[in-house]
Image: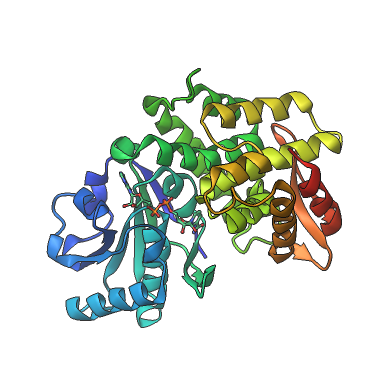
Length: 346
Ligand SMILES: NC(=O)c1ccc[n+]([C@@H]2O[C@H](COP(=O)([O-])OP(=O)(O)OC[C@H]3O[C@@H](n4cnc5c(N)ncnc54)[C@H](O)[C@@H]3O)[C@@H](O)[C@H]2O)c1
């Protein structure tokens, strides 16, 4: 799988990457409004907004649209939207006629820093996320931070969690830039986002290029996601909010195992300023689905959910442990140890 061309610039430059005469754009009802001029609104496949786009029925509707438009091997499919749109568009393009050319124009912060760079495409099935999908790389990703202007603050904060995660992995100036992008009152400085997005995209693409199938170093990108996925499955909180709780919990575990308490406090403080849940109890209270559970049964449910993690090998998890900002170590930790921590962590 060759790495995509990542281009930073206005979305209006899409015409230099894809020929409007043989391009079909996959978008949702909102992101279709961001279609660059020169592209025909009649050659758009509109899908549902949010996670609902990631279903077999949406995939089928996209295929129907491809058939109507006569999309053939020499066409390009462009996913214009958040991660839900790009995950679906990438899968549709990779399977249509055994695979046609595709590219992404991400429109959410999460899609810019994470979903559009990584070569993973997919839809959900029977309530399980990303159960059907494929690894395949877009030919290009066109990143225009100006598209984020209309994105609500809470959506922006949730996407920012992945940017914080990248900053923790890289450390140094990268982490400092992430910190500078949040003001004292916890508001994201939108004018600082361009730099944070660029640093994130560069870090993630370097990991993906060296380890496309996620067998080595790229696993560090799972930082915060082991506890995060457990929290997400029990609370139903949006991904970014659940990962915030997971990242904070991973930092607390790292402190118990000899990591830097000062760095953990700094990361947890940043998440807190952004109004995100900074631990398991905060996540329990933040969700209508879990706030009526007792704290102990909530923790039992999160502990049980850790058993469904893809990073488990037998009874041991390859856990991304943030010993310090700039020092994330892949450490094998017994599942029972992680479960015990979930039962006592704040
Ligand atoms: N493939 C990967 O590697 C990867 C990585 C991370 C996340 N994901 C997936 O991404 C999905 C979540 O994506 P998401 O958070 O980007 O959101 P999304 O695509 O689900 O969209 C969320 C909402 O934001 C709206 N929106 C999109 N762009 C906007 C803009 N510029 N202004 C205002 N509103 C806008 C959409 O219409 C939608 O209502 C999940 O399904 C997740 O699994 C995939």
